[in-house]
Length: 423
Image (cartoon, rainbow, N blue to C red):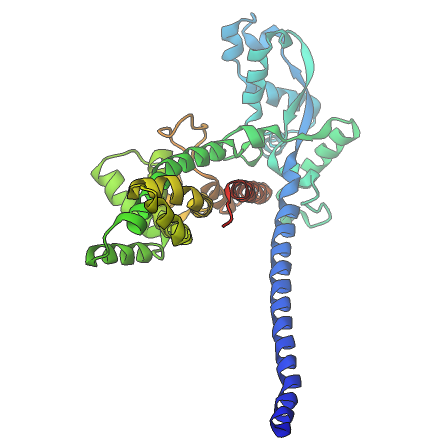
């Protein structure tokens, strides 16, 4: 007896040491994961937070009647040559600049889209026209990058896109107090643009909204109904077994395959238009259905059999048992599965690229049948752009997408706690 006890005690220290090492392995793994996640978030934030500010330059803009054909009317304001007005204002600021190349560099200080902003200002407030007045105009993306410290003026001129003469003109504006950074409203209110300083995410946000709404309206009711039937009502035979196996297999199919399916069926067979949220939502609903069905069945299976037996024992029909007793208890788990599927769909890119939602869309979609794109695709497009100003816009769009995902998951956690019942 003592010998057996000595043998056990001699192995305890070694077993406790192994358990302690295993616990430390787990802690170190969690720590490494947190460090990588923190590095990713911090890097993305440092690259993207500067998009909140955008550089503007104040110019003395000539808005006298001569610029509008001698008479200021609604028609003359709408049809004026605002590009020429801005260029003449820049030439007046720097009359010593000559030569096509230097003047092109001078005109490049102001965004190409500033002419449209100026036109919209005057259409909204015609009283601005009539004299020479100071107006703040959106600066070019290279000027904005320089003002945010991402271009080193000490580097050789050949290594900079912003040349010495342009930096000298910017310095003069700074000395006169005519350069400032303002909150970047266009980034949150406009669609995509070829010009980084004009590009915004509102079009992608609305495209994501309509796409996810279509996906949710299709996938959630169908997925829940299929899970209820397979788990509670369907007979157990070879057909249902085959269906279950195929559902499990579909959950592991690469997402791009669903995009190819949508291209073959929705676009080529049914002739639906490309690059619309309706088709994107239908494709994503196909991808999301297996996840919703599997998680919903797991939630239904977790309901104790005594609930079903008690309902049937007091005379409830099988349908009444499911709808009035089982389904309410399984609803928190089913909602969790649905939100996980929708969150996965919100971050998908590959299937949407296949059906054409990678198109360059400037206008903000007003409905599911208007051409649009989604946030992940917008991030993909900006990340492939050569302009340096798109780097911060890409990072900012990633932060917005992460914020949506965190908000979505936080909502479902709160909803689950509110609906959850314990037995």
